[in-house]
Image 1: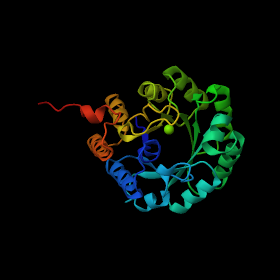
Image 2: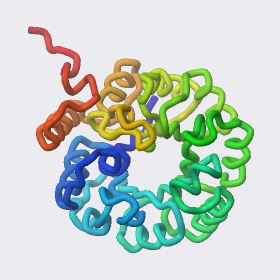
Image 3: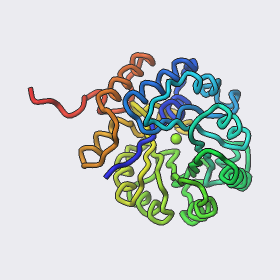
Image 4: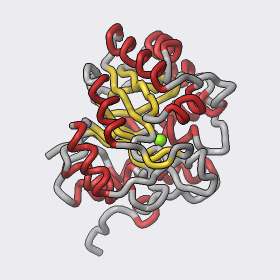
Length: 287
Ligand code: MG
């Protein structure tokens, strides 16, 4: 059994850290993750730099990538303009992200949910690149609370022409049975999980058992949540690799190289990251 892990540290991780790192350092993070044989890396976000200064100069990040065979480089877009920039920059895949609720869509992407859905359908229809559609706040919304699974299922169905549908627990409120039920119902290809309330890894296991094959995670558990200032970020890639490999699920990732990348990030940012495995180390060798 094999899954694909997409390291979203350079995008969802750094987007939610207080520092704005220069494009060259963000590109170096991408390159270190590729050396750790990450099969997919979300390298950049093509959003307005005044809205998300941490993601400015996305084109320069892409230019700094030393491409590695076996790694797919994706980027995030929220609208047609973001897609055009992404395609021109030369990435391999577009991750078009839209919200399950109208309130979140208006706050996060400055468009109604329906406008975002139409834009996603348009990108799917004309993109030369493979398109992943990520449905954010699929389990809960900071403005509308619990999200009706019927709404998420209808949204996924209407965008089923996408190459992949990913369900995102953007604010980290889901629990395993909810994840299992929604992945099964929508036949989602992947999940994007946050460990905000410490359910992220249990949710990943539940999604795996429900048939998910793609898992977003960030090295070191980099990132946070803009709607919960003291909260943790994405599930940590190395912790997920340890969990999956221990359970006999191949990831193809070099865990030691990934741990070294999180150690590098820790020294770069000057603070401990949320991940456990980079601190404890992989399974100990016999002494
Ligand atoms: Mg996220």
